Length: 346
Image 1 (cartoon, rainbow, N blue to C red):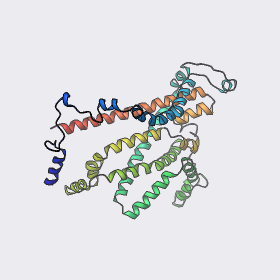
Image 2: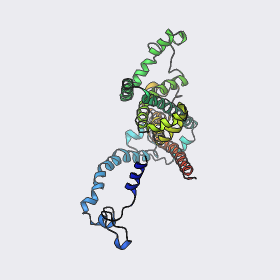
Image 3: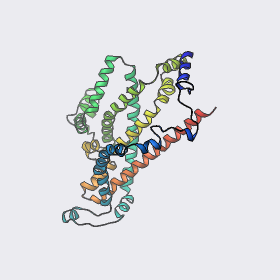
Image 4: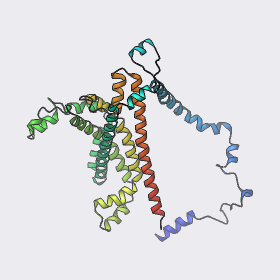
């Protein structure tokens, strides 16, 4: 170990003498390196423009497919655009009237609260179960790990609408496998239970579907990240008498903290904007009790033919999502700053 440390010191220590880089003697002796302003000015003009030319296609695609529709949506949100105006090509400017009507609506705030709670519940379940499956993958043998990884990849690869259709069949009131299985197990009252007949049961089906679709991403990435943790850390923790929970909190979680933060952030965005699962299961029903903000915007805009109102709701949805992510990032930065202060403290 001492010899390795000496070699590392020799590699990082500044060299002097024969074969070493000449010492810096101030501004008068500064040599033009590849990153200095002198070198950059000496590069030919096409070389300086190359990075911008490589980025141009991606920037152009972003402007065309994201920027322009966003601008059109902003303009549309200030208009009163119904079927009459759409057919006659009329432009009826309403100013901020759409926003005033939405923000003054009790329905909008109920849907917003429902969306936030729905997102929090789903992300919590996804992260907890995904971490458990990821840790299980790290402990399994080669054969079982391959079988479980294959099952996760197949679940992840299934298209959203196809998976939603399967779940509709599983939870069907008359022919569903879930009701049949519960009836066989003794819950005869569940033989013809309507899973999409109430708010809580509908949300249960949607939550199971979304969690099932999201688990592979978290589990496989956690397993891949856990392979970078040195085995010596686990051995040292076990020698100190640490159990499974202590090993996770003292070794795995601190080492993979950036992974947990980034994955949680991505899952918040993915669950918050979930649309096909909720719409395909019951179109936000029964009685619009399972509508989230994306479903609410679609129903008001396309379903009720109030396109200006739908555009305003979609923009407010983006604002709510940005507020949630900004709050999450703020907590993350505070926690990282606190951790750095603790590490620097004597």
